[in-house]
Length: 284
Ligand code: GPP
Ligand code: MG
Image (cartoon, rainbow, N blue to C red; front, side):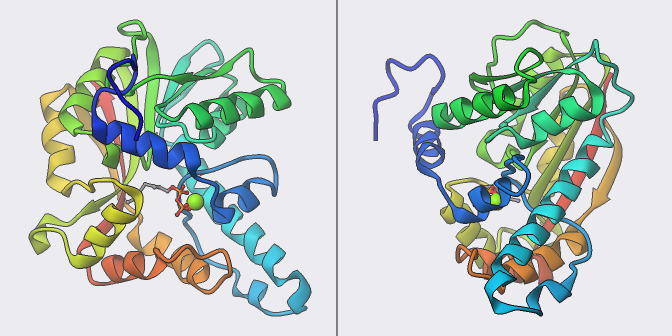
């Protein structure tokens, strides 16, 4: 573990350990999928699986499965972006926890907007900026080694902000205070997240296993709504994507790309203790 004292970005040993994880991460389930079309995601998929990918010639099975998992992850991105409201090319939008840059680049291709992605992983920031350069969109899509809790960006400068599976790395009160500061009034906030279901009490064993695997801290569903209400973010839409993501995990569990975290996800989703939610909110 490297010291944090000299870092302008990392403010705790916890953040240092998260940055270390992502600086070292090279899972084939992320890199092989990204190579399909050059869009590198760090989130899961939604939608019906085409199970025929498991049939046919053994030699090309892995390639078919890789493409199918990537298709489902790309469908998740499209769904999230479709909730950001009407965006124009002159708008500026932010990807909080931007990973290898997939969602940001797709957002620029779709809306033509200026996109700023932030990550506490210097490796991810460098990788994502290289992807933007390769696509020729680096004049409008920029990735920054910054902390989403304290970005340093100008107050009221963003029309939309999203977190695609990155809220479980931060305290939501601090995150939403920064988002509320950055968004202009009438701007839109969207997150897709896994949260534990308060109706079942404290986190189940499977959720604890997911937390340990990624060094994250999955929040209860209630905390999202409490902290949004406290920070001028008023939900406009809540979509339970749990049933839509289970097929992705069932396919992933049956492939050589599996990382070992598939069964805890399936257990947590199937027993009702965990939910995969999209929440969209207006900044009022
Ligand atoms: C997936 O990233 C997302 C996270 C690590 C955050 C945890 C998400 C929850 C919904 C609890 P990834 O694509 O890098 O993960 P993997 O390597 O497993 O594909
Ligand atoms: Mg992944």
